[in-house]
Length: 227
Image (cartoon, rainbow, N blue to C red; front, side, top):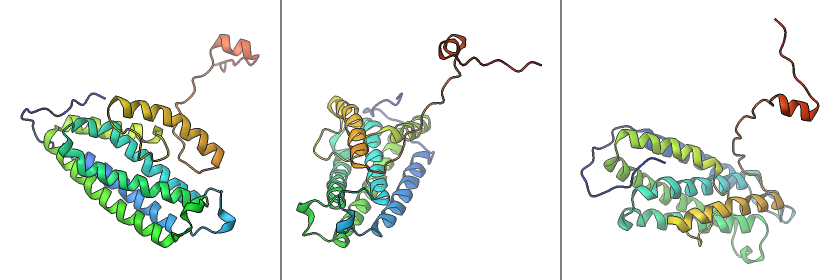
């Protein structure tokens, strides 16, 4: 993506707030989705059926975290710089996996109430935001403004295309993490369709107008308006 990993050299401190503002905007949106999802209390009639607020919350959190793994973490390769964030990330992914199981009526979840489940999600999300903000502050200390702008743009570009489910027990970083995300984009897409989940739709590139040969083969010629 054009941002080099942090080395043991002296770097100029970034002054732009673009990355901080991007992360803050993301969490404002996620907390809003969380409050909307908290209004949903599953019942027997909702078992094995998707709920739009819950599905969108889980998918948006998962996509953001996958994008952070892809874009932000490689720029802080030292374990001490990312340990606390990874622990908070794992906790969020675990509780969201429980939310999904709860949503679809898993028998293993019947001992937990929805209110207790949402309290766990709130606590985990609060801790995650705190650790991600600390991660961003560290990046702002070691990257210059140009790199921070590129990183912010890359985070926004990748997020809508990342896997839509959390995978707390699969690799997250390095070559193994990249391979996992490529595979799980396809797998998650299949199961989202099979489960009838409501998930964000990645933007598609606009189609090019068909050329003369394609128009001929399709039997649908298009003529320019005569002036």
